[in-house]
Length: 265
Ligand SMILES: [Zn+2]
Image 1 (cartoon, protein in one colour):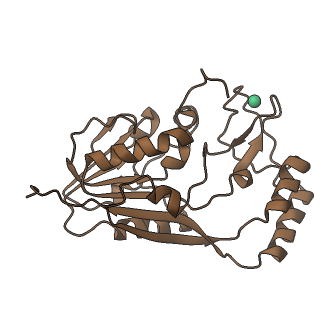
Image 2 (cartoon, rainbow, N blue to C red):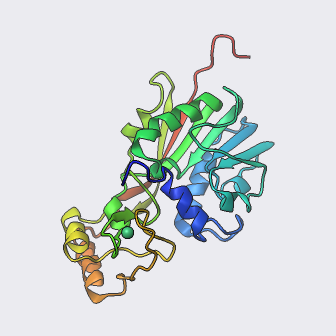
């Protein structure tokens, strides 16, 4: 990607496609319902104010039952649907004072940022939080599994704009060591054997498909769905033999509890 390419591929993706153009009360997929349920369980009962950073159309916002809940997102399309007060902003410059919100939530956002920005984003969440930061991300995601190669320019990109794979150590390391951390996982998936995955994708050119995508490098938007091809299915079956069970934790949930300062009330 060139130096002058847009920094926020994902924001562009959500502005241009229908992914975030949906009301927040649409039924959730089973896996999503589990993740959201586990996320809500990590919000302590005495929390009054919650800020959801990267709230999109507000699926999570709509389900947080606290006196003061609001959100922020870079994408205009999602914010049109938000069920609670929202403001448009980047995660790298939140328009809120230090220590101003009991709990700052950031769900399924950090993986979309350029890797060099993740630490800055976490510092910004931590700055605004008075007591807790609650982050969820895909856990050790195999990026190639949900990627596609552009037939026009050959650029390989993640279908949902994920730019990195995160794990508990990496995420924990983005917050001060003196702040206690709580780690949880939600939903199990079947891992994909890395050699099989490389052969299917880079070797045979069979890639996962999404109807909501375009190449972030050249803008090409017509992609073939390879998932219906017999060979794609053969790889799925071979992987099933290699990994008979859903043994991989799909989502990582991390809550950071900010130590109270000497003069805190
Ligand atoms: Zn392209």
